[in-house]
Length: 181
Image (cartoon, rainbow, N blue to C red; front, side, top):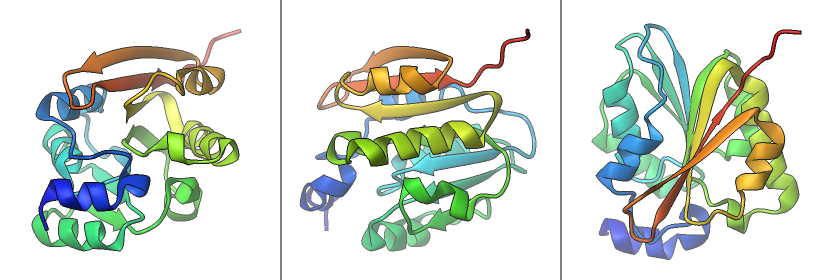
């Protein structure tokens, strides 16, 4: 099945009609840590194009926990990406703390917040914030600015960038900062 058809058939789980562009994948991975031994979490692995970019950006001793609810997408990525750093988790982002017991050094997301209840949105964003290390980023691609205030209500520092994606992509880069008192 072609990528576009797979995404359209699964619109309510992917939130997209096609994979993110290369420019979008690079932008959403902009703040990934390059140091050794880091833990990265991906929400919404899809067919793995952002997963591949994450793996290209991180060290050989880091690892990626990639969450995906679609069984077919998990099977596809499992067959198409052979990398010992990748751990595929066939579960939703709201269950992060059930699978990742380590401190997280970055989260990259492409999940469709618009299709989730307000409670689930908050649970995912707050769970990501709680699991992140100090000065770590949660970078999320969305196709609307509507959820930006939700991220701002939890994260200390948020910026919004755009990319030439179809449709237009908005990247929320949200940093967990701690202020000295």
